[in-house]
Length: 322
Length: 250
Image 1 (spheres, chains in turn green, brown):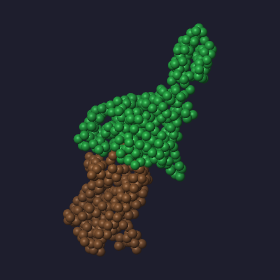
Image 2 (tube, chains in turn blue, cyan; image 1 turned 120 degrees about the vertical axis):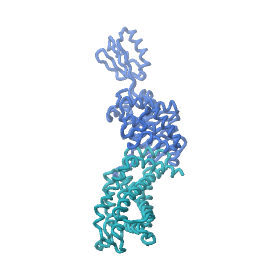
Image 3 (tube, chains in turn green, brown; image 1 turned 120 degrees about the horizontal axis):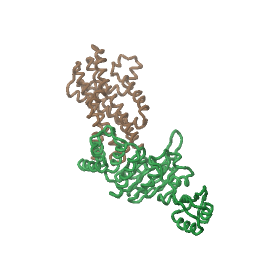
Image 4 (cartoon, each protein chain N blue to C red; image 1 turned 90 degrees about the vertical axis):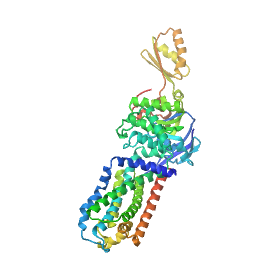
């Protein structure tokens, strides 16, 4: 549905050349939910703005739903919906009025536009706000209006740019539900950018980690996490040194440490090696009090591929953790 | 066909807030009306070389001044929409991008004409006299110059991107152009250097054409010259701002 080859964008700012995007290749199939994960300034939004015909690429080519981005931008615009970073509804308009105008700008006739807007208001919990001025709405309500405007023409592809920035935790999970429903109800292809690890983890089938204008890693959240030095396994036992020795004997175990009665080590797929390890400890008469494996976070992934922590350069997400 | 539909949709959206609070229209026309009421009477008794009374001479100039004030500041309304996601959101729809601008200019001109009629109404009370056809002819010229200046203002807004940058540029262009066009006092009383400067100002010809039109003297050569100047300006600013729009937006 989305295919890009060698997309680059270079900005000229006060005689300085800024290479915002340095060669991006993308393949997103129909119905897939794919996300760009990366810190601010990584080139996520710039790439998205190129794919949505808002910015002309410096070089490279892309094709969306069979329409060439450079030679047929009008065709691309018919196929896509776009929910930008900023609030995109006019503050001096009433909710229904602005939505109907937008539906008509998308090419719907006046009667279809009115019916569709009524349907969307209901679906997005905006009933009762039809005649409210948009400027008087809460952040979460405004965000839902932005989404409605991005999807009310039922486009096969929707682009979201940092969809949950600035939302409270409840509005955030509500927004995620709406994005998931797009695929469930309309088989929409979704492409989003985010710098929130949990957002990428919970929404995307496939994550493209982007840094410095390049894709530095790619895969499902689990695949990406499996690339990291492995899961963290934590055991509390009656005999820490023997436990550590048994852990060392495991194929691929690294970073084995002992802390009192606690033994920690990393290994790929900790969940698969644990049963064998527990049998071994039982055989050598070590009592196991507790055992825990934790999967690596996407932050560990980012750290592994870029050498920097994503979290270091960002403010904490509304729902911390993974 | 779809261009006209898109222009209409953009116009319809742009004009709604003004229709909701018509007081804004009065505020917009207030400063020029103050000129009319507090400055106009100072010209009492003066006539120009053609023997026109002071109101007949002064009101058309004030209409041009009104047009400049209103349409030169049109670009300010575009800047918040480019900064928020409003314009971007529309640019990702199949709507003609040119229509996004023409619809706005159309709104500016329609509101301008309403304000011009308000001003003419007040001037009639004060002693100004004009027929219906001459007034209509005068409004047509105002609309042409209004569209020209409006496109120029939107072009500047695209280029400068911030209100604080747009404000000095707009007043830096509009105030000298207005003073040099002889809307307040006849330029033939000016020292030679100022007079010749005013002859180099294209707007002077538009002001003079507007005076003749409103007096019903359609056949004067200056009417043709002024109208051609206005159309020339229109061609210039439209080409420029549409080129900026296209270049900015691939």
